[in-house]
Length: 469
Image 1 (tube, helix red, strand yellow):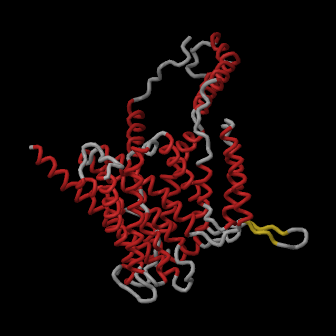
Image 2 (cartoon, rainbow, N blue to C red):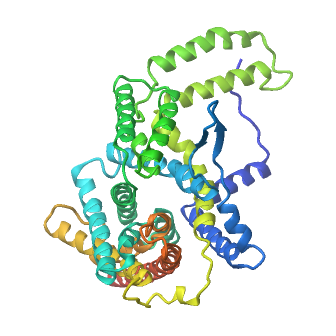
């Protein structure tokens, strides 16, 4: 008897599913969804009917409270609102997924060897330092100084999405370069947040968290691959980070690096499938297919075989595969809806050139940092790395096209807005104003960088084609 006969799917249903998956899997889909969420957030924050509801909803408390026998009130998590839930809990999952991706690239991918890693890492370093210096030069000695980390990040979803739309105008090697650069850039942005945008650090809580992380690393070293061994302690680590003063999202990155990548396919797969065959599959020899395949017992068997196969894949890969759709199509849109909604009380928010001797110019610092600093930093660092032979020019590329792709590094969005939400807390009297001006500048700069990069790529690709004619 055949256990896995061919299924005769109806053509219409098959085409619908293929079309649906094709759209979802396009690199530009996430960027388009985020752009829609930004527009919706701006409308919600500024329409007279919705702006008060929008902000009141984000400020709604989500903390749980309980009264102890001695009359004391316990609140957990302390100060948790809808907005903080999104930025301190949902974004932990986002950073956890980034951590898994970085680990995969470091172990097996584009950052796995010295030659592969050096060019995008050096380029990313230049793309962090130059924008920060431009921002600090413009805002030196003002209240806006602490926002220097805002223009240092690249949004991989929008940047790679634009490259996907430009299709064959960009060599595949440069697409790989930009992806690796964005991953290295994310790692540097994570370090910036960890070291410069936390509060006062409670060393005792941090020491306990590090102790748990060391235990998890030992579990990994000893070959423990069961999910709950890592995720339950992971929640404790998040809570300790939340109260220790280091931003809670950093717990996601740290935990990602102790999640095992090794497969369980050898003895595990043999034992599970052998046991399943003895207990269930052998019984199917006496079952007729008159009632249609699969029947109840066969469905159970197929489900268990499927689960066994999935569990053979390394835990790190399984978590990344499972979480990525939720991050890309739920968590990031929610983040955009919650953080891109700037209430425009003053049209001067859009005047990024305005400068105040006390406040500084957040808008100009961010805009020039992303639009000018990112391509200059990435391009100059890449030029030095290639000329000194520390790195190699990507295949079928030249410096003009590399610079054009570097312009797309100025698309900050996700990480830039996230850093903006952490900045300026030392000046509460102007904090909201500075953050709102920063968000507007990030959106304008990201739009400008995307347009400039696309135009330059189109021009340089035409020049290259004409040169071969």
